[in-house]
Length: 176
Ligand SMILES: [Cu+2]
Image (cartoon, rainbow, N blue to C red; front, top):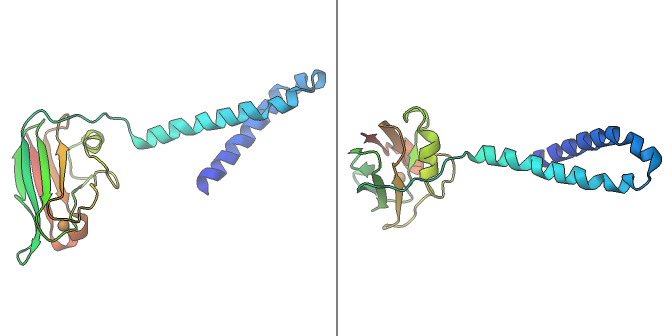
């Protein structure tokens, strides 16, 4: 609805601008009329593209160049947890989270606690995110999710599992 409304407004503004600019032409040449809608439609389509690109953010995925660390995602009589809950890696390494028990689980980073400037690259390194810095849900033991920490700032990266956040399923990575 909102997008439609904006499109209409853009179209009206462009048509008005067009009409103003071609006023003189209209008095001498009738074919100027039918020609107007085409440029207006073209301009409105291209105006929508930059807005969409800006919303997506612009950072290329950077593949890991170091080792891949394993973190288990568990839910059993002991509780819901990541294991290990604290892990120190190097920039350029990757972390692979694997569902062991108690799904669904996922991996979601706290946007307000990761290092300054980390969000764009980390988000670009996360595949199939369902929202910024948030992996999809994984429903089956054996499902796994790997994130490259190539090109991200050093520091602490706190994260949690969306379905079990309130049950204490959170953890921290330290990138050195
Ligand atoms: Cu979980």
